[in-house]
Image (cartoon, rainbow, N blue to C red; front, side, top):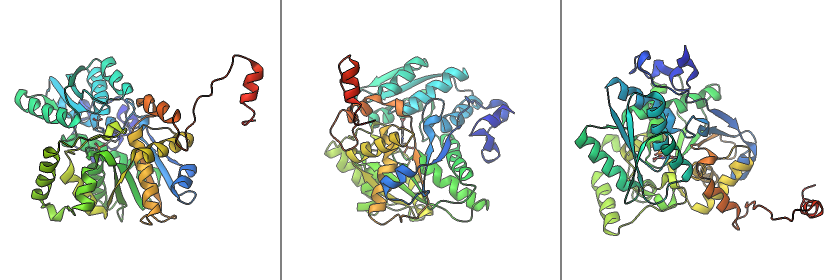
Length: 389
Ligand code: F0G
């Protein structure tokens, strides 16, 4: 069965909403969990204690394909003619791929007019999506796409779409499979719109109910410091799931102040440059169920961590490295012990945002690896290689 080739649909017994003949797949989810001792050392973990789940290996280069195959399948099931999303770049690349390759519906993607990594923009254009550059940032674009989809009956593919989250649950299944179903102590994930975090929580709660695991790992969600709504609400304001009745007044007040000050999300990890995460409440449930924690990481820490991931044999985009920066911080604070078994999620491929990488390596941070200018001359080249040989 070709569905067995998909790292999402080979778990279709756990995603029972889709008739097999309706499934839209491009072979997503062929990703891998890999032990990474050099990155473990950087974080302060013992050898063998860190595994990285490399979701950049998906067809469009990010974890979004796990969710988009499910949303596209549902869009096809309901006969949608047009699908839409707002995006910091990866969701739009993924939707554009499924719309183009599947051929069941057209798509329009909304991106902010500011920072969008060129790798991602180029995908949406090349896969043939109608691409709208909305004046404003991602938070503006998301608010607008929700309004337009509601008014014009367009199928919305952001992570407010519950089928997206169903597909993203399979990341957890594959991690557990990679660990022979031995539950790790921690799963650490970057937090933007908090779709992954919410999907992970749901997956884990369900697996425990099914007796496929006997305990839950702890979830750690890492915000970029310049886009830290969850961190502030959780860590400073004490917002909690509270049995399904989180303090909405507190959240309203937070957003009220944010608007009054016109506070905008600002981070080089452009994928998670988000101030109004749509899955905020769902993610509180995940944190509650897993005894989770939330941290923030500053851009220089994120980019240092990214360089470690690169040199350790993987490579990822900046937002993905927030997970590694978060592990290092939680280790330094003693929240994670050196012998804890930790899984970090690498959400997007290295080549999504080459500008961020080259700018870092041309700069003056500790792990910068700048290109060396050298004369077109063998003697000069050998001189330059003296330190290496
Ligand atoms: N990492 C990457 C590479 C992402 O592209 C995103 C989200 C996240 C992490 C955050 O995941 O939203 O589930 O918390 N990117 C969205 C987009 C917003 O439009 O591509 P989340």
